[in-house]
Each structure stands twice: as structure tokens, then as C-alpha cells.
Image (cartoon, helix red, strand yellow):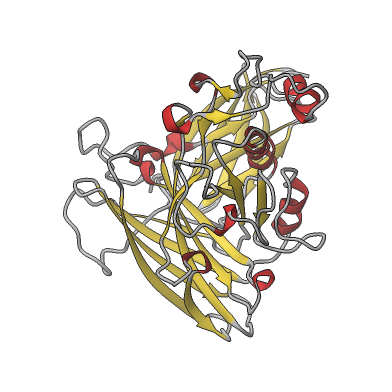
Length: 394
């Protein structure tokens, strides 16, 4: 069995034509953290929030999933969705870029400024109260996604829990209506960017004054395109379980037709379980999982019916690096995995075995015992192997 995408829909549940791909993702006893960011194209400080997510959160906490909500109303934000509470003030965002980590309360508040890593670290260490299984399929001919989401209770609870699904899009060009405003490089002497960004982040290069990053320098990532719950307030999810017992499950099916204005190749699906308490501060995300549409088995590639080799989803970063690397990959199974690192002479300098767990592999590996040079990382799962080259500079 080869590595493939994280989405699946069982043929015993629904029957589709030959163009319909099938895949699955499962948290399988692991805790995944959901970071929901409030941002906007108009926001001069928001590129720093995006940098924090991609250069710190995704690197140091590979089981953190990010979703960026654009807004608010009145700013002419082109990527805002209807009923988005993350960009209208209140508990979740009193400034931009703000974010919620599992919607938990930290230091007396849910909306947190852009230094999210310490809060993500706290929630990553939590034991999950629910598992999330997401089976999804993409009909290429009709552009229709069908998502079957199952919540499984791992710890008995008192109260109400809901399920929800988000549709996200990556790599949206910063051009036209999506042009990204930024204070980076602008004449704001002593401001945050002058101190932290232009000095430490190479991609914050000087550009002509005017307050907007050129399209060649910026792309919007993790943009929430839709919240699929049918509830009156979709962000709170659809009611699933009340006073759940261990082992109890609930399943909900959602559909979404991808508009021609959106790029399916750059889209993702998030499935989640959340509590629904009487007040907003008692509505945490219990667990979440993510899948990439482009990795679905049977996906049409360049006009053919050839499935994409999902092993190509293996990422090793940062590269070059110094003392560690993060390895991420999507799996179609919960079998054991192994990582072997070799030097340019083909000698094995490190080998690690990982017990089977969730279908998203995400691990940070220390390289402090290795010297500078070029290395090859070989990832193996269930008989399938893929190799990546990386460089250590110390």
C-alpha cells in the first residue's frame, strides 16, 4: 500500500463514478492543535503573522493546523466569508493579526497576538478527548467534494460537542483585489518590522514605499473559503454528542462544490470536533485533522486519469538547517514508519523507528550529533520509500 492523501470516502457508504477519488485521515489517538488566525489584505502587520505560522509554528510544531480568516466587514476584504466571528472583534480578535489556539483561554483571553508558539506548545502536550476520522472524495468532473466526518469520544464528558469542516485554499497570489498591505520596509522608524522583520527575515526585502507587497513577494496561505456546518452560526459546528461516553461516535456528511475562481490543486479540508459550552470561552477545539485535495488517489493530473504519487508530499524543512529538521508526510494507513539518514558516502548516520499512529506523520528530529555537509533522508512506510536531500550548515 502506497502513501497517499489524507482524505477518503468508503465505497460502502457512497458509490461514485470512475472519476471519484477516495482517501482517509485519522488522528488515531494523537492531539492536533488548530490555530485560527484573524488577518486581512489591508492589515500592515499581518505578513508578520503569516511569517510566524510558516517559519515557527509549522517548523517547531508539525501537528499544528492553521486556518486564516480574512476580514473584517467594512475593510473591503476580498476573501472574507459570511458570518466570520474571527474578524469582527469580541473574544477572538481585538486586533490583527490575532489568533486562537484551540479556542482555549490563555492569560485570561482567547484572542492572542502573533507570538502563538508557546500556546501551541501547551496544547500539543494535551491528551486528546476525541479522535477525528475524515473520509473525503473529490469528483473531478463536477468539482464536488464530499466529506464524511466521524467524531469518536475517548474521554467521557458532560455537555454538548459539535463537528465542523473548513475548506481552505493556499498560494493565492497577492495581486489585484488580494494585494497585501504591509508596513515592512515602509518608513516607520523603530516599529516592529524595522526591529524584528527586516533585520531577521530575508523575505522582508525593501520595496518602494506605498504600503503593499509586490505579488512576486507574497502569497496568501491557509485562507478559509467556507465553513460547512449547517448551524445558525456555522462556526460553532453542528451538534453531534451530548454527555458522550467512551467509544461513542457521531458521523456527519458535508459537501462543497469548488468554484471556478478557486484552485482545487491548492485546497485543503479541515475536520474538527469542538465543545459547545454556554459561553464562548467554553467552546474549545478538542481535535482536528487536515487533508490536501491534490493528493487524492485517482486525481486528474494534467488532463489524464493518472494518480499522483503521494510520496511526493514528503517535506523536510528547514533546508538548509543547523540543529534539527521537521519531517511531514500524509499517509493512507497507520502502519509503522522509519527514517534513515545517510551521508554522501552512503553511510547510515541515523535511523529512527516510529510506531504507527495517525495518518499525518509529523516529527521534529535533532541533528546536533551530525556535522556540516550534505545528507539524504529516506522515509519508509508499509513498503513504500521516498528520499529527500538536505544540507546541514553549522
